[in-house]
Length: 104
Image: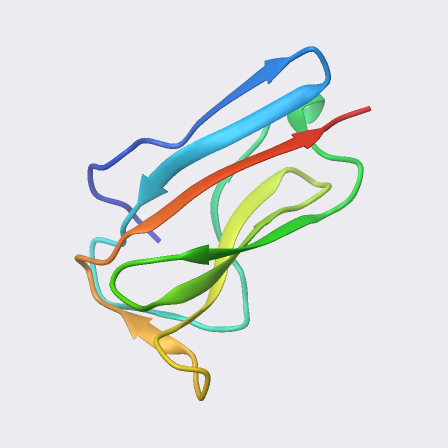
């Protein structure tokens, strides 16, 4: 998945605390279902010891699943506007995120 301009994903580490923030949007209509779509991969010393999940608010009423894996993959999945089915996300939709976690 490619992304247009927005809040370019950023990450930083202060001691053992890692913060990731930003917002991305797809450049074309994209189905965001159960399979994760990787946004980027963190360097090894920024990776959490376990997978870190978070439910996020997207554009309008949409919600989506954000995850940072212990392998360093930062991904989106499970976007929906209702609780009935996963959605095809329009190219103008935003996926904003902000998460903090500790590393070893």
